[in-house]
Length: 335
Image (cartoon, rainbow, N blue to C red):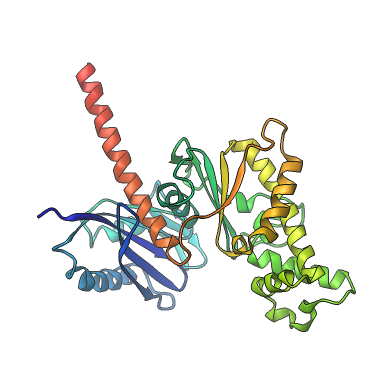
């Protein structure tokens, strides 16, 4: 009996670990999660994860074959297999891949959330026909994964693609990274709220947002108010889109992508953020790029994107390994 090949996609966040078995078609055949426990060590965490997964996987062993494991985590370094200086996890430098290999004897690879999301988009989403694109996650911060000629761009230290931490306003808003004026302090769900609060203090006109205590203001409330025609809420999206578009115009000059794909958070606001972003980007693009770069919403299903991205990461790695073996064999034959 031929077993169906699957990979295990693991998404680590500050509150939980989501994981799932995914086949080559991007279908999740097993999906579960465990909650984080305070300042739990990575060793203890993976021990619990392996125990729970093994208990579930025993019911699948006669049907599926585990080919490898992909892990997506904040501040993960693909080159070293570590998670470094992650405030969300309180991990300074943890050898995650090394720890995971104590429990699984299969290929294991790790990268940060945005990179995994980009590979997920390449394999399962709206980037199937692209070789050069940028995936941008618009959540509490701004994460990005850059795909060049079909491969993720990691850079020398493994941390390439930190578009969210490009400085777009000198001495601007304080960022969690310790600097000021980073793009993600303006273009993210938290950045949107900060902009709304600034506009509420700047203008005296009526707004539905004034009915909400500032500490309770959220991106979702701003979105709903904008849909109802609230001028302050709409201006918030216009300002955010203008800043985002300017930043993307610079990004296009660096990488010349076919498309920029948005996911999560602000991306769910649709045209409210996309329209002003496109207008601003096109206004600021070099003439050679005008009208040539698409801005799209992610094609990955909400809720499963993290697991699919982590799974796609290891599928991609396994594929590249096979390609390299074929090339090496060909070289030996030629010699």
